[in-house]
Image 1 (tube, rainbow, N blue to C red):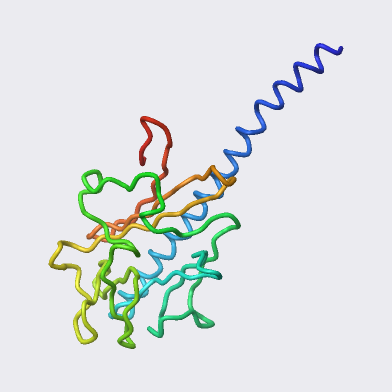
Image 2: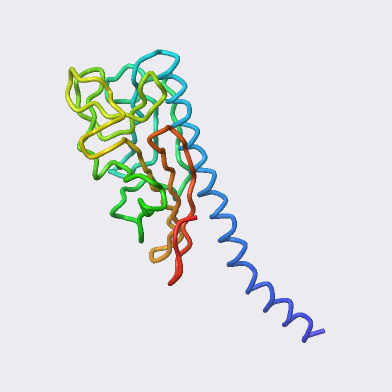
Length: 200
């Protein structure tokens, strides 16, 4: 009986970390699906309104935990604007904070992100670091207050990437990404760490 108990304890201690990692992976994927859903909602709203709308991120103490559709272009969340709150331990991060960025060769385009975009001007003429959608349902950036929200910049077609991080402990995190291609296709990516790790 003592041997059986010892075996059960050993098997249990080996499986608990795997179970918690699987739960954390599901939470991160659910958060990435929230971001993708907000992007899709922004795209639909921009085409219905035949204008452009931005999706902004924010949160408390500099930690980006929210994404919202800025319908009135004032650069802040207002009651009635669609908002997604990330689950606990999940934050929206810039591309410099991930172990490896999604490879542009894999994507077929060089994505913009909050930390490498020169910014887009919203309806109020404020410069914001955000993904915008135009009335044709394409990702765009507005390079000046009076300019059109264009899908083409001097650097190429507009695509976007948003990275997410779930902090498991001080030294351990899980990563996901949501990309928007220049044609408006939205895709969720997961990151597999290790020597052969990468985005899939």
